[in-house]
Length: 115
Length: 109
Image 1 (cartoon, chains in turn red, green):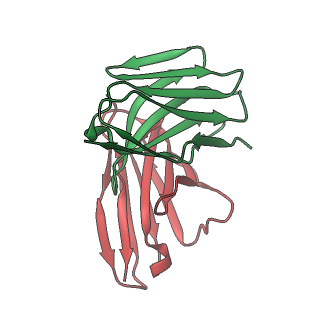
Image 2 (cartoon, chains in turn cyan, red):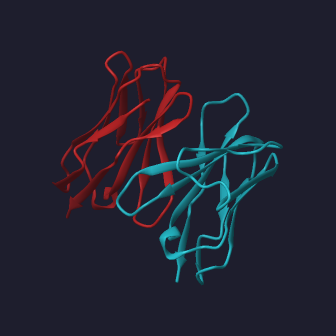
């Protein structure tokens, strides 16, 4: 089956630093990738949708200058949390969708803790 | 905007019991519906995918049904085991992916 790798699985950083999270589709080309955020005991909230080679589309209320998304190839998208603060601590999950298929394959998630 | 609701929010059952988790959605114009399992602090594991033209899907002790016209799906778990304890999420695919609020299941040995 389709595999999506997300790295790192857990990161701790100091307030004010930037953190990059990678999302890779290992055995298929992902024309679209999605980034979600999940708060404790809550469901997933879509942050942004990225298409290869174009700018990401951010959901309302998500700061695009804080959460930088790059989808440079058909197998890789990155989310950079810039100038992280404790309130950015959360579980971030990516997913990838093959072309012309309304199916998303999910990564294992990244737990970000900002001290 | 699509809204996905899951009832109950939490469920606790003794081992061996059969159980049903419910998912409802407000817009029937969907491509498919997926059920996921999420263990604490972990990512999502896809359990079953039902295309909009299908009525149900089965995998082992799991059976998921879809009634698109009424905006409902159920996940049936037979002979529950302690290892089934997790949060179960349903998600519908339309213009984008919409997740339900989740059901936290505890199976008591």
